[in-house]
Every structure is written in structure tokens, then in C-alpha cells.
Image 1 (cartoon, rainbow, N blue to C red):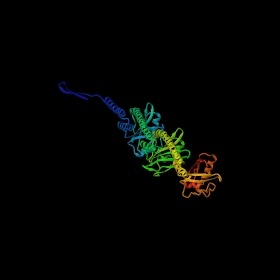
Image 2: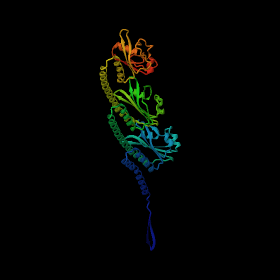
Image 3: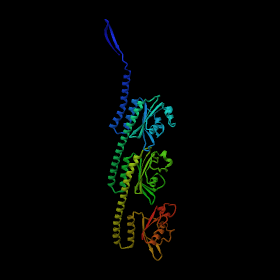
Image 4: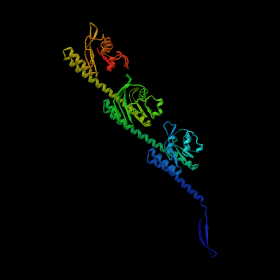
Length: 503
């Protein structure tokens, strides 16, 4: 409205002009709202351009959406690798009790699952909510109206954005249009951030592998190598417990070379491989990842407890494979659930491949070095024996040096009497004090000669074939008895397992 004074017929007068600007005012308000709404898209784009940290982008986007649309609560869910589950990533304005119960939905479930399947925004009132399992928690939270928009990147689903109000609200068409645009833009930002994260993880994994490869190449000592493996693996994952064991397939035994639980190192231990998590890794020849033992234990073998004797909730075991052969296994464990994920399994599997090759190389080097050492020792022994003139000195030196050479706790020489066909103990090293030394006590009297009773079978096996024989100390035959419940009580008392008899 405008007023203009003037003189009319000699009198003062005013001219008033009234314009109806309602339409223009509405247009200005609409433009202002549109500008404000577009600021959300700009904010998402700005956040994605200045940061590739996924959580930073999502947090900033959710705050801006809630502010612009005047909504008090909302959350963002991301699609899990299984392609079937939308898991809660972050939220605003929702109680912890609600979040604890409503933290994941399947594709097609609830509002977010429906929006994900239909690939378009979905709005509804609480009375229309389709999922009975979650509806009571929504009602308890006081939610009246809901809206969900899928997060899409090049047409592929990456997640969903949910908005909720505690009062009835109808979302206007332009708001739905804005949510659609937000879903596309935020979906692209999520994909870019994930791609950056994957690229960074691959670079980190390569760096770790290079560092481990250099460290492994720096030693040919097996114990030093395994210690390097422990140090590098514990630097990769946050674990409370670690062990590495080498597998002996012939004895079906695990040699636990390093065991650490909550920083305390346990002594090495060699034991028969019974049913358990470690045995599962060895027999299946594939990694075993347990995210939550308490929830998964009904389909798992029992856990073998050691160290603190507490049950770890997270368990990841990796086989050391050479071709199709398992030569060992290592495991990281944590007392909290969900400590390890697929990325941890992937990088540790790659490390396991490198460790298996390094362990085998170290073993081969050790075996070759041992062979060379023994050959040199045998040459020295030959020279020493050649310088002796009496039988007793020769036999005494022979048993002492042979026991050291073979790293054996005992060694004996039995001389065969051709007339009586008896084996007579001529010299010994390391036998118990109670071992009869009377040369007339021979293999013909096993009940009287209990400490040497087990020699009967192996000596007979040797004399019939005139070659070296590695024989079981339990039954005296070329087998692998694993129970001390039968057989020689002498072997049981002395914990002998194998006898090598040489003609």
C-alpha cells in the first residue's frame, strides 16, 4: 500500500494505492525454503569434498537434514556385506534402549527395508507400520510419523536414511523430492568414502606384508621367526590372546611354540590334537572367524581354555598352508565380542601364506644345517675312535658321542653272543641307575630285565633285517602307539616314545 498527498478542489487530499502481494510473498517464502533445502545438498557435497571419512560425512549430513526439515530424530543404516541386512551406523534424538532393540533390519522389513527394496522414499504414520517385531519399540519411543529414503550410488543400494517425528506430520511433495536428491547424493558420498577406505586398507596391508616379509627374511632361526610373526600380527589387530602352533601330521600333535594371554607368556606345550577350535582350523584348512562365541557356541566345538582360563568372545584362527598341507596354525582372540571382522581375516590370511613359506624355509635350512653339523661330528667321532685301542674305551666313547649327536637321553650297545644267540649289554649312557649291568642278563630274560625289556622287540626287528629301524617303545614294532596304558612299563616310566636300533 502507498499514500500520495495532493490538492483536490482547493482542499488537501491523499491518494492511496493498495496492491495484493500475497502471491509474491508466497513465492519469496517458497524460494527461501528451497534455498534452505538446497543448502543440505551443498553441505553434503562440501563434506564429501573436504573429507573422505565415512562417519564424518554421515554425521554432518544427518544433522543438516534434521535441521532443514525440522525433524527431531533420525538415523542412517548401511547395507552389510551379506546384501540382506541394513545395520544402524549412527542416530540422533533416539533413546539408547530404542537403538539397542532396533539396530538392524532385513531387506523388505519395516520402513527402511521397504524403501531399500522399492528404491524410493516411503512415508507412513505409526498406525501403518508393517513390522510387528519393531512396532512396540516405536510406540514406546513416542514416534508418530516416519519417512525413509534409500541411499543409492549409480543405482546400487548402499543404505537408508530414516526420519521420525513425535507428532503427526505429513511430508510435502517438495520434501519428498528433496529426500530423493539427498539419498542419491549421500549414497554417492558413501561409495566414494568406502572406496577411499578400501584403497587405504589395501595400501596398509601391502605395507604390513612388506614389513613382515623383510623381517622374516632377516632370520633363519625358527624361534626368532615365530617371535617376529607374533610381534607383527599383534601390531595389526587388537587382541588379548595369541598363539602359534606347528602341526605334526604323523603324530597328530600340535606344538604350541608361543602362547600369550593378556600379556603373560605361557610355557611352550606339545599335545595331541583333540577336537576343538584349533583342530577345526587344521582339519578344514580354512580360517575360522567367531564374532560372538556366546551366541555361536551351539554349533562350535568346545573351546580349550588356558592362561587366564576365561572364554574369549572373539576368536580368529588361520591355517599355515603349503599347497594342501597344513604345517601349523595361529590365532588371535579377544574377550570382547565383535573384535575382528572380515578385513582382519583377509589381511591375516595373506600374512599366514607368507609365514607358512618362511617357516618351511627355516625348517629346511635347520634340517640342512643339522645334517651338516652331524656329518662333521661323525667325522670327528671316526677320528676319535680310530685313536682308541681297547674295546671298553671305544664303546664308552661311542655311546656318549652318539647320544649327543642324536640329541637322545639314552644310548646303549648290545653285543651278540653267537654261541648263545643272546644280546649282551656292553655299554650304556643315560639309563636309570636300577638298570642291571650284569652282562649275563640278556634279551632272553625280559621279566628280570624290565628296564631293557623293550629292546627285545626292536633288536629282533633289527637283526632280522640288518638295517636301521625306528620302532615304537610301547610295543616294539614299527607303529605309533599313543597310549601309555598298555605295553612296556619301562617305557611308561621313562617316557620313551621311539627307539632307533642300528646294526
